[in-house]
Length: 93
Image (cartoon, rainbow, N blue to C red; front, top):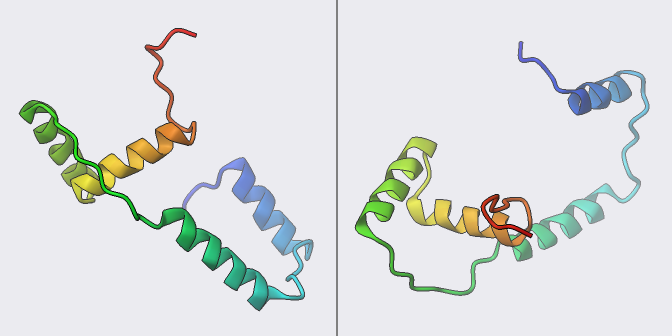
Protein backbone atom coordinates (compact mmCIF):
# COMPACT_ATOMS: atom_id res chain seq x y z
CA UNK A 1 0.00 0.00 0.00
CA UNK A 2 1.21 3.52 -0.78
CA UNK A 3 2.28 5.90 1.93
CA UNK A 4 -0.01 8.90 2.40
CA UNK A 5 1.13 12.46 3.00
CA UNK A 6 -0.22 14.50 5.93
CA UNK A 7 -3.11 15.99 3.95
CA UNK A 8 -4.20 12.59 2.64
CA UNK A 9 -4.05 11.10 6.14
CA UNK A 10 -6.17 13.97 7.46
CA UNK A 11 -8.78 13.32 4.77
CA UNK A 12 -8.82 9.58 5.48
CA UNK A 13 -9.16 10.20 9.22
CA UNK A 14 -12.04 12.60 8.62
CA UNK A 15 -13.74 10.03 6.39
CA UNK A 16 -13.22 7.18 8.86
CA UNK A 17 -14.59 9.26 11.75
CA UNK A 18 -17.65 10.35 9.78
CA UNK A 19 -16.46 13.95 9.64
CA UNK A 20 -17.00 14.24 5.91
CA UNK A 21 -20.53 14.97 4.78
CA UNK A 22 -21.90 15.02 1.25
CA UNK A 23 -23.14 18.42 0.15
CA UNK A 24 -26.91 18.64 -0.31
CA UNK A 25 -26.76 19.78 -3.94
CA UNK A 26 -23.97 17.41 -5.02
CA UNK A 27 -25.17 17.12 -8.63
CA UNK A 28 -25.29 20.92 -9.00
CA UNK A 29 -21.85 21.25 -7.44
CA UNK A 30 -20.38 18.63 -9.76
CA UNK A 31 -21.92 20.34 -12.80
CA UNK A 32 -20.60 23.73 -11.68
CA UNK A 33 -17.09 22.39 -11.11
CA UNK A 34 -17.15 20.62 -14.47
CA UNK A 35 -18.02 23.90 -16.24
CA UNK A 36 -15.23 25.75 -14.42
CA UNK A 37 -12.71 23.00 -15.21
CA UNK A 38 -13.63 22.97 -18.89
CA UNK A 39 -13.31 26.75 -19.10
CA UNK A 40 -9.98 26.67 -17.27
CA UNK A 41 -8.40 24.18 -19.62
CA UNK A 42 -10.01 25.30 -22.85
CA UNK A 43 -7.31 25.94 -25.41
CA UNK A 44 -8.62 28.63 -27.69
CA UNK A 45 -5.47 30.46 -28.81
CA UNK A 46 -2.48 29.52 -30.92
CA UNK A 47 1.10 30.76 -30.82
CA UNK A 48 4.11 30.25 -33.01
CA UNK A 49 7.51 30.20 -31.42
CA UNK A 50 11.01 29.74 -32.77
CA UNK A 51 13.32 27.49 -30.76
CA UNK A 52 16.73 26.07 -31.34
CA UNK A 53 16.56 22.55 -32.71
CA UNK A 54 18.55 21.43 -29.65
CA UNK A 55 15.88 22.82 -27.28
CA UNK A 56 13.10 21.29 -29.35
CA UNK A 57 14.76 17.87 -29.26
CA UNK A 58 15.24 18.21 -25.51
CA UNK A 59 11.56 19.14 -25.08
CA UNK A 60 10.47 16.21 -27.19
CA UNK A 61 12.71 13.83 -25.23
CA UNK A 62 11.39 15.14 -21.90
CA UNK A 63 7.80 14.85 -23.12
CA UNK A 64 8.43 11.29 -24.24
CA UNK A 65 9.87 10.50 -20.81
CA UNK A 66 6.79 12.07 -19.16
CA UNK A 67 4.45 10.23 -21.53
CA UNK A 68 2.79 13.34 -22.97
CA UNK A 69 2.90 15.10 -26.35
CA UNK A 70 5.60 17.78 -26.39
CA UNK A 71 3.13 20.58 -27.14
CA UNK A 72 1.12 19.54 -24.08
CA UNK A 73 4.30 19.69 -21.99
CA UNK A 74 5.14 23.18 -23.29
CA UNK A 75 1.59 24.36 -22.62
CA UNK A 76 1.70 22.94 -19.10
CA UNK A 77 5.02 24.62 -18.29
CA UNK A 78 3.78 27.96 -19.60
CA UNK A 79 0.53 27.64 -17.65
CA UNK A 80 2.37 26.86 -14.43
CA UNK A 81 4.71 29.79 -14.96
CA UNK A 82 1.98 32.38 -15.56
CA UNK A 83 -0.04 30.92 -12.68
CA UNK A 84 2.91 31.43 -10.32
CA UNK A 85 3.46 27.71 -9.70
CA UNK A 86 6.74 27.71 -11.60
CA UNK A 87 9.26 30.38 -10.70
CA UNK A 88 12.44 31.37 -12.50
CA UNK A 89 15.03 31.30 -9.73
CA UNK A 90 17.58 33.07 -11.93
CA UNK A 91 15.51 36.27 -11.97
CA UNK A 92 16.56 38.63 -9.18
CA UNK A 93 13.83 40.63 -7.54
